[in-house]
Length: 76
Figure (cartoon, rainbow, N blue to C red):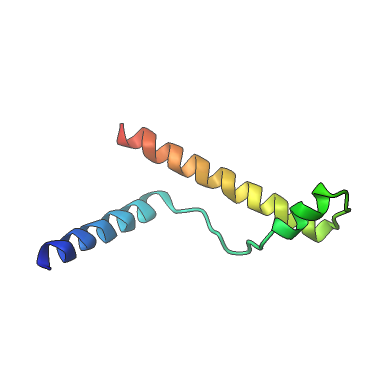
């Protein structure tokens, strides 16, 4: 119905404004690290590429935490 479409368009406008104002952290270059974590938990050794994949995931996670904390602070 018309009201649903208007509501969804408002949501798109809001996320667009947020993205343009704060610049969401990039998620490009992320890879699945679950197999690496499992291997390390059972005593396996990880190579440099696998460790870097985990490091990148942690960095992006921290960037998103900072991003959302900043959003919450600005909303208050």
